[in-house]
Image: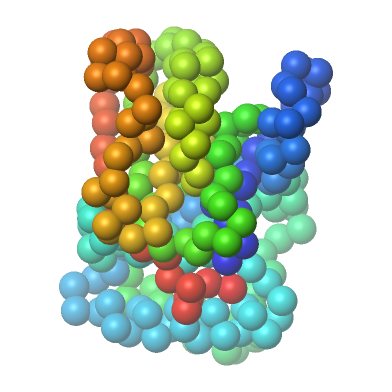
Length: 245
């Protein structure tokens, strides 16, 4: 994302504010919801789709609007993700503000619809302390997403594991660019989504997030979470700065 919003988002709840250390809250004062529109493009229509997205990006920048655009490079190669963030869902009550006006917008929407096989819409909810920001001078490039669905009734336990086991371990190792959010609308709300940022493919060859721990320690910690899981999926996305605004 243009200003790293995809890894800088959370919702600050009163109880959490009372309990979280001030140092953690200082890095976590961002939005509370992430809206993701996933578009699957028809075979042979990717170039047309991208041209239309470039038109929208130009108009969006001129209008002072914002969105972040990602393309799947491991997963479904015809899938693209447009991402926006909100402080609260009530912000949607103001309605969608189109970057183009009148007939131009109608024609653009019709042309885009013609390129797409399907489109889905999801909302993720963020939590205080679930974000480890990128380094200040880091540029967005690749993002590894892990979708983990836990057994019914285990989301509370899984959140405890994220907050008390996983995130402290990652922070101890010094890794920057990691977040964990939960599906809120448009999918199974027992699904948790982690996002790990990488500067390039070579960075994935380096020691992992938990390389400072012994194999026994890693296995014990991850084993606690794996016992709660019923489904898991991985995708890798590439940030499209040219189509973001």
